[in-house]
Structure formats: C-alpha cells, structure tokens
Image 1: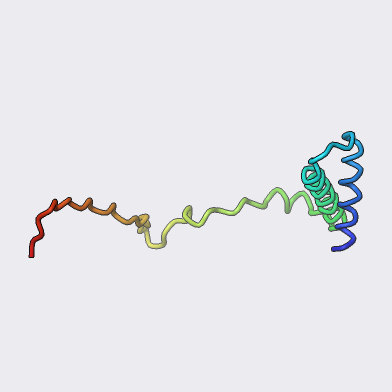
Image 2 (image 1 turned 30 degrees about the vertical axis):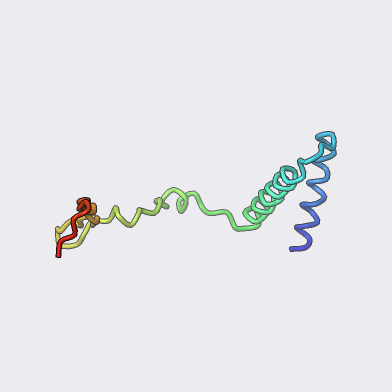
Length: 97
C-alpha cells in the first residue's frame, strides 16, 4: 500500500511539472496519477493470469438479471407495488367526535 502511495505521489508530481506547476490542481493530478497506477496494476494482473481459450470465451454468456427468469410451473410473477396513499380531507375548523 505504501509503495502504491509513493508511486502515485511521484506520478502526480510528474503530471504537475508537465502542466507547468499550476496552483490548486493537486487533487486533479493525484486522481489522474491514481487512475494511471490502478490501470497499469490491472493490466499487469491480467497479463500474469493464464489466458482463456477462445472456446471458453465464446460460450460465456452474460449473467441474466434476477427479474428476467421465468417462474416455474407456468405461473408468472407479478411485480408488487404499494398503492398510492389516499389524500386526506381538510376538515376545516369543525372537530367531530
């Protein structure tokens, strides 16, 4: 974690210098450096993994949302919603008991 922070700090400094050392842009430079370091770490992690075969990649289907599944036994599910609340009548100044 500390090594990533030092890498981000160094990269943010390089970005700051490259842009002409502007005042008040430190957060922008830090975030840009963070994104660059995270992206490079992600690609490094992917390249270290064993590549998947073409057949496995072609047959993988995206996950279906939970609501898209059919109900068993031919019954269909009905979304449940709460009915809108009834407006209350203004009773005026008369109190009934």
